[in-house]
Length: 124
Image (tube, rainbow, N blue to C red):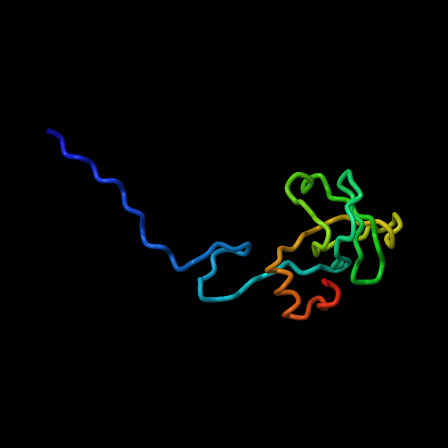
């Protein structure tokens, strides 16, 4: 007779959780969100025009038509009301056209509002 093999038991849960910026301890509430670099602006999606083109109201006061670049096209899905970082297309009507750089998740938007990077009225 052969002995029955025991099933491997699951290990203890680690006190860490996975975030964008790497491993963070579970008790710390550190959420790091990407901030716009020089020449980039925060924006909020007003309308989806189709063919990976969005209408975005920017924090600098302009409403721009932005496109989702090819490297993000199938990976980054945007909906109306999403907060994004955009980069104006300099040399080609920078007040009317732009390109998407980053889309924020809900917890990152909350962090941006709490740390006063964007005004609360802008998101609502």
